[in-house]
Amino acid sequence: MKPHLHAQGKMKLKEPRRAPVGGWYYKYVITRNNLDFPATVYGESLSRLIENVNKDMRSNGVTAPVDLADVIETQICERQPAERCWMGAGDHVAQAIHGVARVVDRIAGTRLEQKAKGCSSCRQRRQALNRMFNK
Image (cartoon, rainbow, N blue to C red):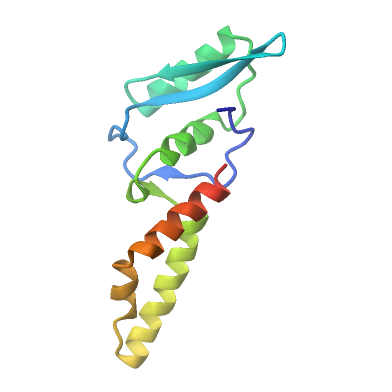
């Protein structure tokens, strides 16, 4: 897994002090003499992980992106269940749908928003969009 150059479509942990599923780790690639070496860095917390990744990259001659903290958090979120992180493209789409459904419910007395919340295929589409736009 190559590091993101920048955290476009960045995702944020909803509870950054809560250990993520799988633990605090970040993967990147060290390239030397046209050979790629996978690297995995661990930490006890998000801030410690960011610190450790910075040190590891520095010691391996890898230039850390300016937005390294965002890149790390986005990579962690890519491994999490959707409800553990905020705002990928799919989450924006879901928010818009829920907003429209809420207005229709108020005007027409329907229960569209409740149906949208329980829609498993909607959740799968949201996760697919998040993955697609956060690479």
